[in-house]
Length: 608
Image (cartoon, rainbow, N blue to C red; front, side):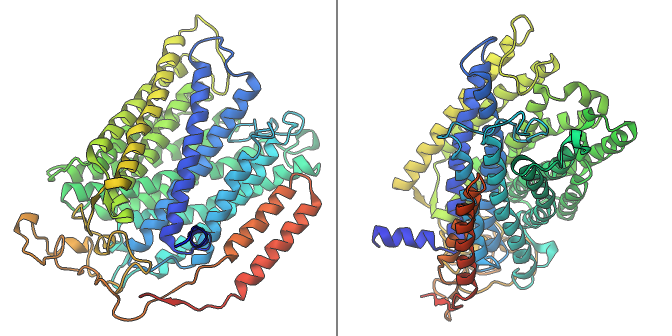
C-alpha cells in the first residue's frame, strides 16, 4: 500500500476499530499536552512568591489544562474505548451509524485543534474550564480567548451528542441473539448509561454556550445583572451538565473494572444485577446533585439541605460497587497482571476521592472547602484515581485484542507503581494545604502560611507523573518492535470479544454469535491445565470464530463525506471569530457534505 493510499484509508474509514485508534491517539496527545500545562502550574507553585509564570499566563494555562483534560483527553479516551469494545462485546459487526461515528471523531478532533489555535495567537482562554460569568464577559475577558473556548466546545459537543445517539442505538438494537440486558457485559451496560447521560447533559450546556456566545459577540444580556438577568444562571446550566459529566467520565472506568476484576479473579462478578442498577441509580441521582457545586452562592438553606441530601444519597450506589468488586476478589484465584493492578488501584484511590466527596454533602463543610486545594485534591482523586486508572486498566486488558501483541508485564507494572506513587504524592498533600486555606486559581502565595512544604511535595509528585510515562512509551515501542503474540484470549476471559482473532477482522464476527447466559466463555468452565487440544478457551460455548466467514459479509464503504461535513463545520466555527464570509463558505461546504452523504450509494463490500 502506498503512503497516499494508507492516508486515504484512514481519512475515509468508517470502521469502529480504526476510529477508536484515531480517538485514542488524539486523546493521548491531548493528555500529554494538558499534563505539560499542569507541570507548568506546579512549577509556579513550587515555592511562595515565584514569578515563573505571570498571572495572565497562569490563568490561561489553568483554563487550558482543565478544559483539555475534561473535554478532549477524558472524553476522547472514553470515546476510544466505547468505539473499540462495545460492538465486539455485544456481538455486532459495527456501530449502528458508521458514518456518523466518523463524523463524531472529526468534529471532536477539529474542536481540540481549534481550541489550541488560540496558542500561536497568544490569546488562550483565561476564564477557567467552568467559564463563570461575569468573569467571562468582554469587560473582564476582552480577548478572543473565551470565544475560542466557546466555539471549540460547541463543535466538539456535536460529536459527543452524535456519539451518544450512536451508542444508544447500537446497544439497544445490535446485541447478539440471546444477549438480554441482564446478560450484557458490565462495560456495555456502563456505555449504555453514559450514552443516555450524554444526550441529557450536553443540551443544557450547549444552550449556555450559545447564550454566552451571544452575550459576547452580539450584545445580548442573558447573564447581565445590570440588565435584569442573573449570572448565576450560567452556573446552573454549567453544573447541570458538569456533574453528570463526572459520571460520563467515571462510569466507563467502572465498567472496565467490572470486567477486569472477574477475569483476573476467575470468578463471575459478585452481585451483577446490583452493580447494573447501582450504575443506573448513579446516573439518575447525578442530575439531582449539581447545586452542591453552588452552596456558596446564596441559594438558601432549603435548597442547600435538599441538594446536600441528594449528594449523600449518591454515595450509596457508588459505595455498593466498591464492595461488589472487593467481594468478587474475595476467595478468587487472583492474578496480578498490570490490568488487574490498575483496577485494584482504582478501588483504593477512587474510594479516597469518594470519601472527600461525601464531606461536600454538608453545606457548612463545603462552604469552608469551596475554592481551596481540598477540592482540587478531591476531584483529582476521582478523575485520575478513578477515570485514568480505570482506562489504563482497560488499555492493558484490551491492547492484545486490538494489536495481537502482549505488552511487557515488567514495564507495565513499573508504569502502574510510578503512577500510583505520583497520584498520592501530588494530590494527597493538597488536602492539607486546602484545609489551611490555600485558594484555587491563584498564581502565588505568601511565605509563613504553612503551605511551602505541601506545595513542594505536590510539585515533586507532578514530575513523577512525567516519569511514569517513560515505561509506558518504552513498552509501546518495544511491543511494536518485538511484542509477544497474544492469541485469541490471553486472559482466558469470558466475553464475546475474546472469540475473535487478535486483532479482529474488519467484519468482527465471521458468524454472528448467539449467547444463552452471562459470561458465555466460562460455561462449562474447563481448568486450563485440564484442557485437551482443540478445547475452546474457557469452555465450549460460544465457539471460537472461524477463520473465514461462511458467506459474504457486506460492510459499509469508506466515505469522504463525514470529513467534508466536519470541515464545513470547522470553517463555520472559525468564521464565528468574526468573518461572515468564512461562515457562509463553511455553511456551503457543510451543505455539500450533507448532500453528498445523503445520496452516497449504499453499496457494501464483501469480506474476503
